[in-house]
Amino acid sequence: MRAAAAIWLAAFGLSATPVATAKQAPGLAQFVTLGTGGGPLTRVKRSEPANALVVNGAVYLFDAGDGTQRQLAAAGLSVHAVRAIFVSHHHIDHVGGLAPLLLTRWLLDDRTPLPVIGPPGMTNMVDGIASAYRATELAPITIGGPPMPAIRATLAPRDLPSMLDTPREVYRDVNIRVLAITNDHYHFPPGSAAAASARSYSFRIETKDRTIVYTGDTGPSARLPLLAKGCDLLVSEVIDLSAMAAILRRAGDIPPAVLGPMIAHMEQDHLAPESVARLASTAGCKRVVLTHLSPGMDDETDLSGYTKGMAAIFAGPITVANDLARF
Image 1 (tube, rainbow, N blue to C red):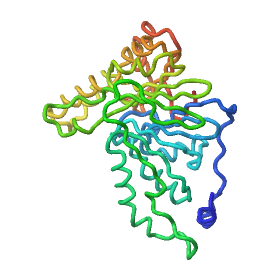
Image 2: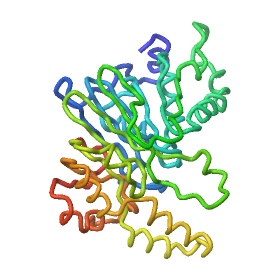
Image 3: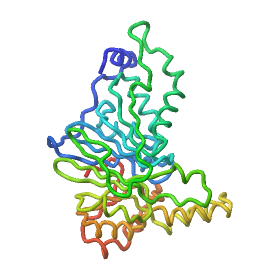
Image 4: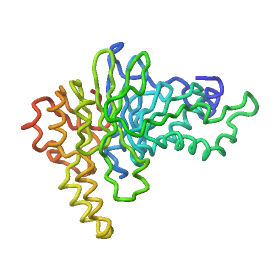
């Protein structure tokens, strides 16, 4: 940590030493489900979607929903260890924690431009975050001393290609190789302006010791088995459709003209348990971890709706993840 950040932390009585990560064998990859709740609901037990891959002390984020920084701290992972961020799509529950994370990193004097890789519009979003926080940029934390750089100078956003029908490498460093495909999380009505730009992606992460596939949000997709083929760990979204539909119908404040399209989105643009099992079986995945639980409410006591019918299709281990679980 640079001197300016250390001085700033000391002024508030905080430690300048990054929180230690949990013990991990050198070189081995560990996937941490930081937040496992699907959708933009504020819950106590499940934070919004965020995941961390930890390799050799480096952290790679896959989605950054609201509360990501707090979940990193709870997992014993330092913001300073983040080497890249991958965004699956631009729904608010997957990007709500992005701006605070980028600003904290800048404030604590991390100067190496951070890759932020996501769908078309990712660069514009990062540019907008930097522009929106110009007032913060101009608010000093020291009296005198060297000037802070522009927020934008500490970031390296990149848009993924609009269409990836087959897995394509989108990132590589000494620890990991990341491939991506476009998945099927959107169905656009005729003439929709969003059809030209809104995209959602799934990621395959290859490390020295194992391969992990993260679906992000998607409905059934013919491309996913290509990405997930032979992976050691499939980290998939899952929805309990009957429970989700019941909650929406009970809400009482959703107009009928909106309720039908919302339920259709849940049915077509997310993965029911049997769809996850078919994907894992077809692709030859070794293990499945279920996250982005919808509805994922705090009062849930029976999680069987998230795994119903899976064992008859997929013979491998299946785990319903909790926040801060490690795989």
